[in-house]
Length: 338
Ligand SMILES: NC(=O)c1ccc[n+]([C@@H]2O[C@H](COP(=O)([O-])OP(=O)(O)OC[C@H]3O[C@@H](n4cnc5c(N)ncnc54)[C@H](OP(=O)(O)O)[C@@H]3O)[C@@H](O)[C@H]2O)c1
Image 1 (cartoon, rainbow, N blue to C red):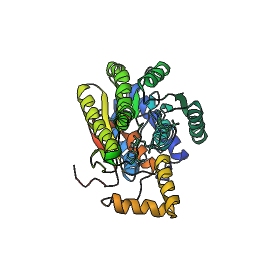
Image 2: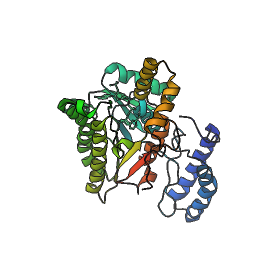
Image 3: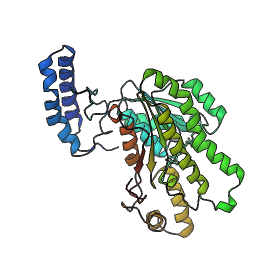
Image 4: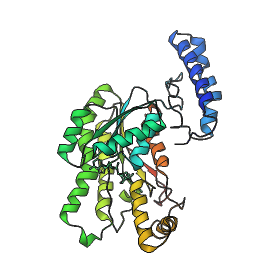
């Protein structure tokens, strides 16, 4: 993920970190005068930079968020000390989320079905972020047994991103029972099983973040893959219901709804069509948006990092009042205001 705005370079991070340490020390010593100045310093040094653009996941090892006088956190995301599990994260949106959370300081668990793909994902992540803490755990999370295996290796987490999801265009008449069940098991039950296992300890700790990666297809059900749409709507129900069941705790549960996004899975899909039709992939992608998602405001596929940025925010300390929400990163595809 690119560091943006550009002034969030190593120099400015070091400056903020040093400044942050000084401010924290003042607070620890009970220096009331220093504490009273905190919001003023923060407003001039942090808020101005951040109001000019999201530096959210842009800095590795950011300032450990220090509450302001009224207990709120300045907009510097630091997840140091938090463990994050991201299902289906060797590629695509899941990998970008793992990288974003690792960049914010979380110890991340990347997951895929094979030892090879998970080890490769870990190496790829470490190549970009050498100081990151990354565990690679192979398990097929589309089955109850696979989830049980996974939980043996990762019994606890502070952050759970239920990203795993499969899609496949198929006419309604051609979708057999087995496909309906496979989509439900993979896209919905994987998240339910993991959430059910991890939520009790989060509740006990009075802190936790659970995110379901749903889709704009959960709101605008595509006629060409109703079974996929069904699972994405089901995730919204589970996410909202689980958030309500954790009411009054420090655990938030949200759904993030990407629109068409250039993940590896989607790029492969468009690549195959381009080959079949003898067109360029860029043309196929443009045609897809124009024909199948004409309400798109951005008129392009999103990049995986654009989705990951929202997820990193919603997993942050700062997002503590956002729960039970369905947060769209769909480029405006869903034509409603709410
Ligand atoms: N891309 C989009 O346009 C778009 C739009 C809206 C919503 N979404 C949602 O975003 C999420 C990610 O989509 P994506 O397009 O980034 O996916 P993707 O590129 O197809 O990536 C799939 C990932 O899932 C892993 N995986 C597949 N089956 C698995 C299983 N049974 N157990 C564990 N891991 C498994 C794969 O790892 P291995 O191959 O290593 O097993 C890979 O890391 C999905 O929930 C999808 O519905 C995507």
